[in-house]
Image (cartoon, rainbow, N blue to C red):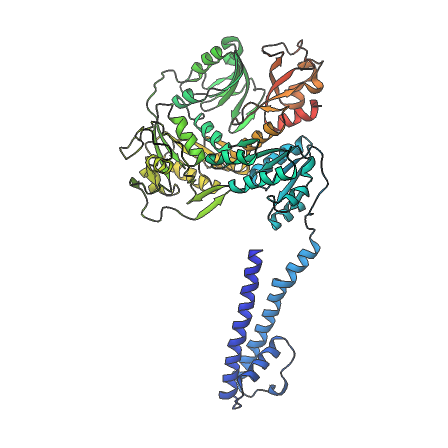
Length: 610
């Protein structure tokens, strides 16, 4: 709508300017070249007659070649203005006339989910809902976006989700849940409107600034989700060797049962060997669910597959036995030097990553485009930025993620290059901005090689990218890989579509914010489906037995039908694992712990869900 208004204003301004110009030229030409001076209004009349193609009247028949040239130019300009006017006015009007508009209300429910505002996160959630054949209604405040979504087949209405009337148009009175994923302040208003329309509806909000979560709860939100912080912590768990050992504790499935993802080190005893040569189950007593090769998850593992350095293995079993296998996947000679890590982007995700690094022996340099007036190193003599942008709730200046809302205390993580880095002293409550100023070591745009060099990228072993713009993250990955080919790069992606791009750009591990958000929403909305690991590339969920009750796992051919692996069964408060799939019979009240890709889990629910 704004673009159309600008085009209209520009067109009208062009018409006025062209008319004035030709009026002055024509009036001067009639006096100088034709010897027939006339009032200015008569010349204006002739110009209008030319533009509207109504004829010239008594002025027709010019003697001088100059005036004939003026008239020809005026005629061509008039035709151009007419054709431009058709494009500016007629075409949009015809397009609106033939394009179906989204309805103002839809008949849906009962028990449906109302989603307020469309974002990549809610798109992932809608995909999950469709896979489960759950009813939903989307309220989108932007008319053009609502129209496009309607054309693509979404159940969407155009309206203000902060309005009770708009929520009533999607039958919020019979809805099971309202999910608000707009701006932080708008989400609180949406919850209040939903409570007015239906006091009993369950309200879930997603928050960018975790300091504002309490206000969402004060407005009436039942659950406030912050996927960015979880993503930041999960990225640190993917850093090789010492950091991963300190941070990644896996997924606990019972008192003596864990699911853990680990990487094969280059100098380990299993590196470069075929899978069937290692005899994982016989030697270590753990089960390998699958492996990641070049970003693709393979399950079951091909016996002839070679476990090269960098291959990530997903194993399940007793924690002590898993630790024994972990030792076999690590370097033969284990040293734990203080790793040098560059953390680019100090928003919610970056702050969570920074706090996780405080539990390690790593030396960290924080790079961000904003330092809140810090007197530390300024690595760029320009404006420190690049284009400002807004990326789904993250204020990004120069592509970085300056959400400067900090916690009350700061972890003890030192900078390796002698700058004015963190001191490890706790800040007083309420000193969040000062804390951010102390934490950020290098101020500048991560897309600038000089800035990365100032952050010590060539000496670093790991680069963690928690930037709020995927395009900037991709470009930074390319630059960092060029500057340091041996660098381990772990990156945040805001959109699933950019995950593969980041891998191709040179990232070693990528975690998608939309994937985490979708899993968190599914687990929160549907009580019978608990996602046990939001932040893993593989989905780990707890589901009811469904139609599997009374069958054996092998008899139902669960893995062949769905690609999922049932790693444990919860029965009567205890966790059963290590069972024989050919003889173990699933009970009616059992809950199954299932591991698989998102698509595999969806297939399982379609195949065996009630």
